[in-house]
Image (cartoon, rainbow, N blue to C red):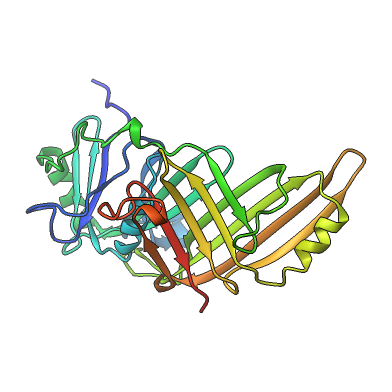
Length: 310
């Protein structure tokens, strides 16, 4: 009988709770580009025989979710450094449980909003000794999944898909850019500083990258953008359901801008790229109706992430 491809569940919860009562559960839900791979890590080379002897076994799982929310992103950031329990279920019912206390995995969440989609991608990675990996494989073949209260088990919910819905592109904040947007994207991702021996990613900073391209732009517009200074404030806001929205508010000094004016025989474009790294601690969430969401759900409905200058 052939093995069944695909993953039935990728879920994270607070460290130490998977074996009892899982809390702060984040399921990837509707996923794309899921890819779980095991490889040899730091193999021992025997040059004269062209041998690469085993050492560590490395697990790398990558997946993207269209059920992205500020709650998901902030919760996953809080789980960084192996600080969470993880349950991965394959479609042929192998149940992998990675507990923070005994066999942790590191996670790197990346938020991507652009003209095509709004997603959060997660890289999950860790390395194990041969003995530990053999034990994980053996346990996965017979383990029972922990119920996380999800229906279906994947957490897939089409009502939670984030659709592309631009509401504001302001630079500085309260001043909309010049319109006629050709490209509009925001990426916030970990700025890795090191990995542990167990190949767990460590980071305490994030890098934000914003790329805006506008057409039918005059020289006066270009001069105006240059006049906004080296590091203007910026607001990137997309709508959710009803009056809810996700907003990302960068204070002046966080991002450095690079405006590029381009005239050809068929176009007059202004591309504005902004980029900057900042400590995770400088990013705070605000919820409730006045901030795009609900005061009670921590960013599931929507909210505003504000990034202060260092």
